Length: 455
Image 1 (cartoon, rainbow, N blue to C red):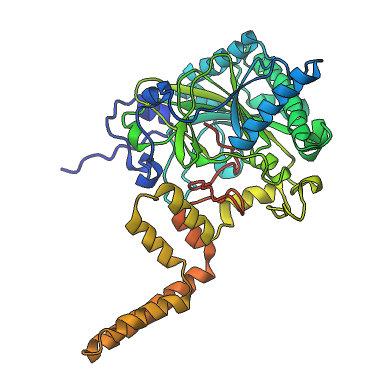
Image 2: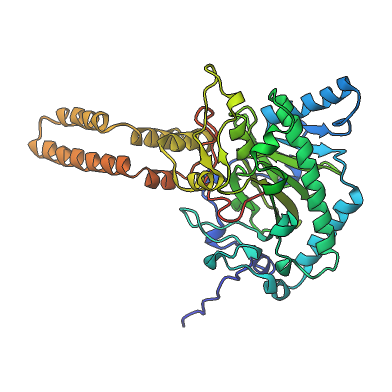
């Protein structure tokens, strides 16, 4: 008797509620991506080791110069050392933030059939609306999340037709929150500019100013997962944005790759998490860091996060280190690219250095595997020489010599293929190089084309 094949539900929420105890294979991540994943609730309670800094913005505009500069220095230090921080006393009311959370949670509490009325169509390029991550990575693996994605600022770039009509407060609450995040971004840009010794408006101008900076919101919904040790809500990546501001429902899940280890961010009440994105890292010539991060899941609680990505226009501005940040001692670390080109570079234009970096981050304890990858980076002459030695050790057998000669030819051909197609090598290693000097890895960065990731 042939058993009936039951199709996998298209939404992760439906899959999670189906009662499965074993997740489908397409959600099982490669082992090297699962390093550092344990019980997220226990990890969040740990006080030892490095902790994501908390920055109090209460005095960001203080009239007292000494107090104001102290606040600025703390923010700058966090941007230089971490590239991520908890912002408290940020000026956005707890009441408004609660309205945003209630509105988003209420939408995701609707039946899947109701949410499907807002479904996007990624195949046709319509990315705004309700969706789930498609398999766009080399290994075809999926992420354990559903989401709602839409532009929220400026007003003339929004499409309110695709915004949820339920609950009724969704549009007014989200609109007001986006406006206040835009104002907060201006203050952050000013502090970061001053931290580089520039005029306070320099970075904001560099990302498009009030006219062209785009704010995109992505609400991430991470259902309970029966095997959280095998899955990821969002795979490791850095944000391509200038700044990213994140709310969450106080369920832990954000992890940062800091000093060679995954660090679980604590849930800080009344805070907004802020990431420095690739755009600011580029403009600052690497002085501010865009940190590698991921989202993990659990089997006990649903996690929801609200991420707003502040993005420059895709074609209008050339992203490159500001001239003031480049000196003979500190030459430019990044070639000039538009924002669209930068996203394409993250997707397609890798090289063998990226593969070496992934080895260092994800497989540093696997010496045999590291040796294999290291060998793949040698040039043709070195590899041929190694096998000539093997041939010479087999002088007693002409047949063996002939066999080794054939091996040499195959290996040389393989090396030529590797050299001719660096993209294939990168797809195999699934990595991301943050910049030309820091060896920091992002695993399988197939992000933000067209939907930005978050945790």
